[in-house]
Length: 127
Image (cartoon, rainbow, N blue to C red; front, side, top):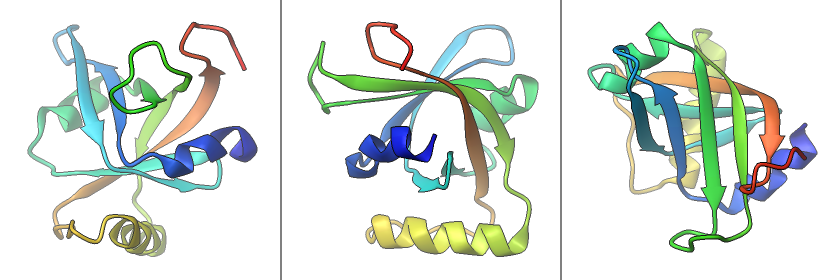
């Protein structure tokens, strides 16, 4: 799975889609780093995204040539879960800070990881 996620390395932002706590669709841009076969992203704890992910862990992440409709791309479907281990959290925050030098995490930021279940091309074909 790590090899199939390699094209994401060049992306700065992914779009994360989930089901809102009231059943409505919700999409948010996220910063991210890859951690083996998982996609990890931070979020402030007071955003609606946190409530939505607690209500339903099923998500999709989308990457394409930024700003290009109909471009080659990748959709990752999976389950989101909180990163709770202190060592893993510190390692991921360091990786995020290296990738996004203009961003600085807050002590309160939560980290989530998405373990992919399916990879699809943007036309819906399974990879």
